Length: 185
Image 1 (cartoon, rainbow, N blue to C red):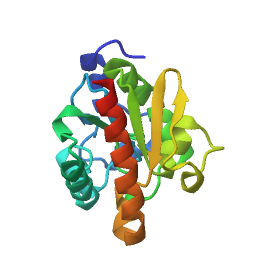
Image 2 (cartoon, one colour; image 1 turned 180 degrees about the vertical axis):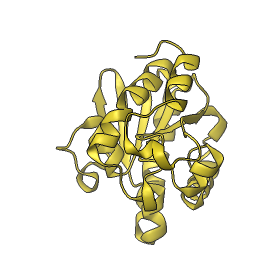
Image 3 (tube, helix red, strand yellow; image 1 turned 30 degrees about the horizontal axis):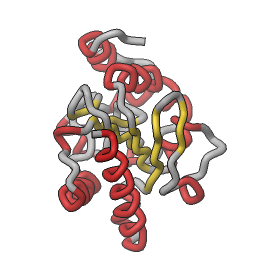
Image 4 (tube, one colour; image 1 turned 90 degrees about the vertical axis):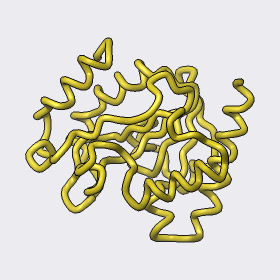
């Protein structure tokens, strides 16, 4: 585990723990408020994220930003990260060994940020954080509490681009997150 952001970022930038390092342009560590009460975790960087070094800047990120605006979540006040820090080829899901190689980085991010709420964006994030026994269809929209953190699994924004019917669920889930956030204030 890493005790500060400088050590963590340096380790990520020099990481060669899995094959994803061989094709990366940038390591995509995370972005946002490093003291956020609310954290979002996706699966891995896409082409736009790899190019810019920032998570959720492509089409899915733009859709997420629109939802944030509509609900009143300020992107600068949340922290956003991914299961893996390097782009999987052709935007495929990270393989188990790739996700396992990055999990200590993500655990360190969670320990450093100390969020009260973590939104798990999609099945890959859900299964890697809470366990293989969880499925996104059955779990989305339901609070799960572990180690004093409340988790809200929901659809990954990229899934909304493929299936418009999931947008209402995503919207409802984010509204529930916002409501809980407001109750913490």
